[in-house]
Amino acid sequence: MRLHFLGASRQVTGSRYLLEAGGLKIMVDCGMFQEREFLARNWDAPPVDPSEVDVLLLTHGHLDHCGLIPRLVASGYEGPIITSAPSVDLAKIIMLDAARIQEEDAEYKRKRHRKQGHTPPRPPQPLYTTEQAKKAVTLLEGTVYEQPRPLGSDVSVTFHEAGHILGSASLQIAVGAGDAERRIIFSGDIGQWGKPLIRDPKLLDRGDYVVMESTYGDRDHRDEGDVADQMANVINDTVRRGGNVVIPTFAVERAQELMFHLGGLVHGDRIPDISVFLDSPMAVDVTEVFRRHRAYLDRETRALFESGRPPLRFPGLTLSRTVDQSRAINGALGSNVIMSTSGMCTAGRIKHHLRRNVSRSQSTVLFVGYQAIGTLGRLLVDGHSPVRIHGRKYEVKAQIRQIHGFSAHGDRGDLLRWLEHLSPAPRRVFLTHGEADAAESLAKRVRKQMGVEASVPAYGEVVELD
Image 1 (cartoon, rainbow, N blue to C red):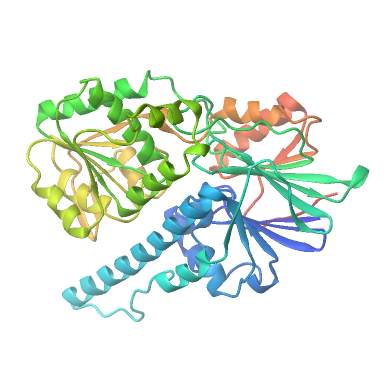
Image 2: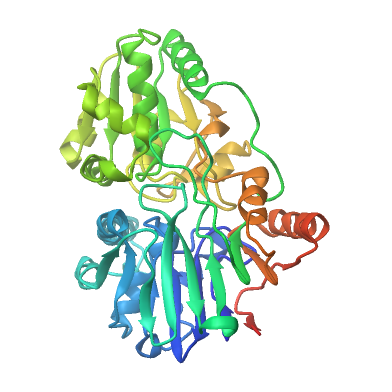
């Protein structure tokens, strides 16, 4: 068996692996690189011949796990893309929206160049088109948790709840039979226990080799109190100043969790009667997927649906799909809460809202998720000013706030809890999907605490498995 590390290696985004086992070439995830220093990798030719890949397994529908699938398909991949049933719906939305954003951004840059009288040697092009994304989504196939799915005569995969977002999965791939059987686990992104909406991660029984994420491998989440209390404080303080609360959000899970908590604040009269905008066609579509796949939500959330008080609807909430609806937000009177994608401020409508608010001392930009190195979100969190948005520089005068309890990723304690449950202990652990320092810190902890060989592979590294 041979394992190729083709992304998310000593970095957070770009999840992509290739497992050669049982005569098959199995790709796990094919995600977009989002850190600025690695963006060029998105444009590279696939590191393996797509026509030789037998099957693609998708852990979940986030862009950094599925965002390069259309390019893989356009380059020759024709096999199935197997994922959980909710992830089929989410990946369709994510990939089609990413294509639209790519096309819009390319056109925006072309218009800006024409306006400036600049003619680049190569006009801006989208990473992939809507038509290419549409072809990719036809290959998606849904499967269910806890039931082995054969991939070949001696190879099968079982999807387990990862507790990260709706439909997220950890993959347990079995190769061989009897005493010769080996199990390779790809953790995907592991969530936290006790989060709203999403079910808790499933603790797995056995894995000889484990590829595990390490986003928060060097720390535990700060306990800054109840996230709803923190949200109420930020909103009330901003309203007193007469500004807007702008929340860059991820369309999948994070937007829905925000709506869950905002609904609680509204129904509890803990914030003023203000307008709340969810300005993202994708997030609106994703919210419908949550409603459609209620069986995958936790017990408490299902009970709310059945009680007649839908957890993702509340007075004052406006869902904005069209460009005109988005522009209309600018004319809304008084203070407002504006949630918009993308969560790291790399593209999409959030940039337009930041342009109007980042230089206003009355407003607040509230971050509720991880910000990768090199992204606009990370620059704002790190206190940079001015920042460049749509080719212009803006002084940062708005308050920049963070709430850490929203993270869909488990922290160091959660990761160790998940890993230590495996019995017997794995032969080897490979730590990916984390910045180098975080991954190395967790590797050191795993070696010391569990006595297990743990390493942090480099991009492009190939490892032989016994």
